[in-house]
Length: 426
Image 1: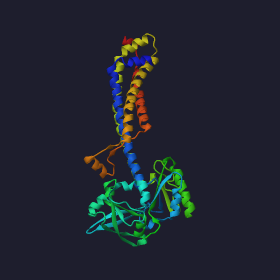
Image 2: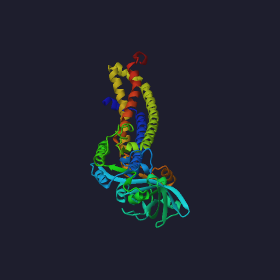
Image 3: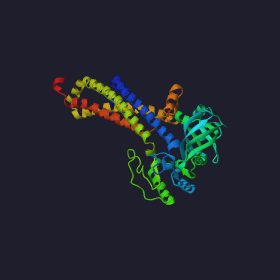
Image 4: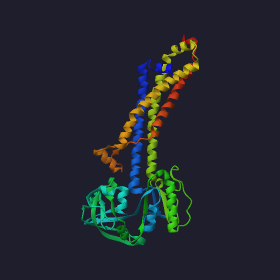
């Protein structure tokens, strides 16, 4: 180790070049990985908090055919019992349907979401998105509309809009709603096409008292997802008198078992199943990230290999003298291997020392984007933020990658030393 350390600093320029190449490779890979995981993690978190929930309960067949006749019935006592299950933080019943919204001479198809204002405030922080008017009360018969929808209909707070849709068992649904407030939703698509009303008003609209399109459940600890889902199923079976469960189907990459588990009248689905398309997109993006990092590390690997070849050929006479003086070839090869390994690890550790506080800072204080770039991201349903995440696996993976690259490049000098012909290099 002492000899290797001294040899590292004999040629400072070569050492600094090697360390710098490793440093910048690890630096950019850590930042890119942290940004990718942070962006997708935040997107999934927003989806779970606002639209999906960690667990969803639906009527049997609703997930395949989302229309009113597949809604489910559930009494308030059952919902209250679900709230008492350990690890559940929020139970949000919903009525989600589609309707034609009209104001004066303008009409547009929208999604109407009936929510419990109190529960929705705790789940998605909807009151903080209010830009005009007042939030709904539990017994309100008014409506909240997105800012984009308000602009399209040219309707303001206090105006009355007409909703026309389909009610339960083929009945027509038509009702007038007074606009209580205007909200600014996360994405342009949601802002232009979503309206919120209370559960009672939505149930009256579709003529289905105690009817729900689904129950969204938020949990405290995602590691206990399967346990919580089992508790939910047990509660439904006990209170609703449901029959035996059907066989389960596989979820995404085994992330949650029993994702598609059915009861006689209900389906209990995990978020790995309900936002499957988003998770698949995330996995595709991660595969692309791995490809980019692989190309970057390949370039760095060849750079290190070129430096190692140059260093080895420059020191052939030195190696010859060392072996002639009695140093074993294996010990000499080990010394040279340690030189390269130490230089690579120093470069990697310097990059981690620099990136760790950066990723921590920007995980707490995400970069807020503005201008055209922010508008473009919002159009694709992405918050205009650059959040980073601090994940030990990101840093460990980079160090392991550098060690593997170093071990491959070490092969050349070790092989050269072990097969060195002393007579040709006097």
